[in-house]
Image 1 (cartoon, rainbow, N blue to C red):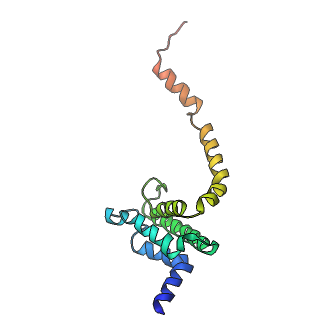
Image 2 (image 1 turned 90 degrees about the horizontal axis):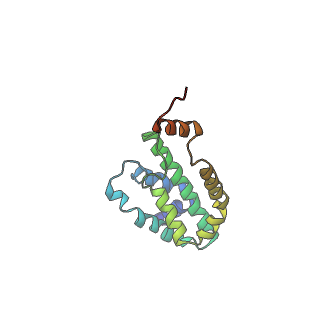
Image 3 (image 1 turned 45 degrees about the vertical axis):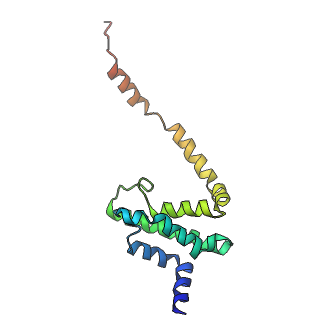
Length: 151
C-alpha cells in the first residue's frame, strides 16, 4: 500500500517527481556523462510506465504537467548556475522528456497544431532579421574597399 501511494503521488503530483529529478542531479547544468547517458532510458520509463504511454487524456495531461514542471525546475537551476544560459544549447533532461513524449505517444498532432503558429511566427521573425543592420553592413563594405578622393 505504501508503494502504491508513492507511485500514485509521483504520477499525480508533477512537482514531487520534478523536485526528485532536480535533487538527483538530472536537471543540473553540470551533470557528468553517466547521468546524461541515462536520459533516454529514464524519460522512456516515465512516459511508458508512469503515464502508460499517454493512451488516455488524463495520462497525457499529467505527463504534460510533469514536462512543464521539469522544464521550470531545469530553467531555475540553470539560471542559478549561469544567468546567460540558453535553454536547448546543451543537453537537457526536459528536452529529452519532450522528445520521448513526441516520438512515443499520440502527442505529435496535438503539439503540431498547438505550436504551428508559434513556429511560423518565429521563422518569419528570423527571416526578417537575418541581415545585419545597414549601418554595420555599410561600415564593413567601406572598410574592405579602398576609398578614392576625387577632389
